[in-house]
Length: 508
Image (cartoon, rainbow, N blue to C red; front, side):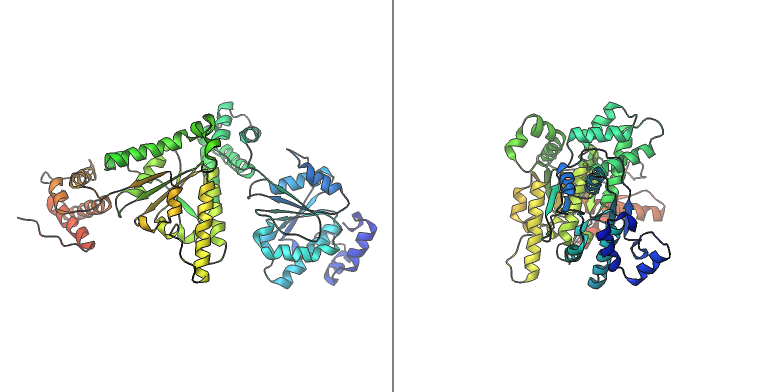
């Protein structure tokens, strides 16, 4: 409250009080300004846990009133680190949610001015959370800092320019396996060392995500916490991070439903081996130090529509025990400058941390060739491609791209692809196998069906054959009969003609 501020500062603050605030104080209303209640929150000084950043503590004890900036993604523990430094010198914090501040310049300046006034009155340090959520907040803050005599703290995903006072910056690094193990052990309580070790090694999460995942795992578990419960806890956390950007995909097909030439199958086996053994090859064998960047696994599946690219991606994830998230490009790509890169960064960060496989279906729409700059649109489109190139090169997770137009993919992306699998149109023998394998064992099928005849007469990919089989099943169900060759021929002809091809009648 006012009496806690030193005399000179309190007198200065009181002289600048707006009338409504002065009236409220005169009435004995000694809480925070009501206009800020949805924007700020005072956090009392609490017991300090974990490592305190010594440079922040030293800066808070110096007379310069510096600006302290903790840089890292959400969940990295930025605000916690700053609050720990404040608690070490005996001060509480005033947390400001920058994303909730006004976007109207005059109103924003009034809010920032009121926030600094309240921080001075209550003898707390202002902590601006996610300062980069609104670039205008940093400008308004710098303009108002001149009359504020105390240190100011902020968290941000990126560096921010502040020129009116000394700036102390600390970029938070992702915790190593030792730190992750310690945090899992603290949060999971009585969980076995095997579960704690497996969680620490498998998931390279930030502290905030570990806390949320552990909370989820404890809520799921009825007795002892298992690794399966931890997996479910991480999955729930990952789902929140990717909400609106990608959706989790499950597959009911099996490898028996895949019909591919031997060369392509061997490439898929190699791709699975890269995922399974990359920790051994890159870390244990030391290849990671030799290759520098590119510790992730990126693969490109190209080929005509319906050749099984997306299905194989799902089967690979299923076999490797990894969740597959299909990217919603309509949500990721934005017309606003910088928004696409921000959404992609969030997507890649979440996939790396949660050990998820991300799938860019129809990737040529996002990873297209850069063009000659003739307009501002071309320039910004090229900037997005350049960002993707840099991000994919530094990516340590698993990323699959599928495309029907291989030639449209930028050449620089192809150089960053670990495995490129080309899915060809199936040959006649493979088409016959597809017709045969796509008829379920439980289906009522007549004896006159000839998969070889269907394969010979209709040059269709697996996706169209699947559509034809399903179409024939509905025709037979409507007639109350078994699926016959007549049904399959009629359905195959309809699919064939939908591709603009001419199909002849079946001979009697």
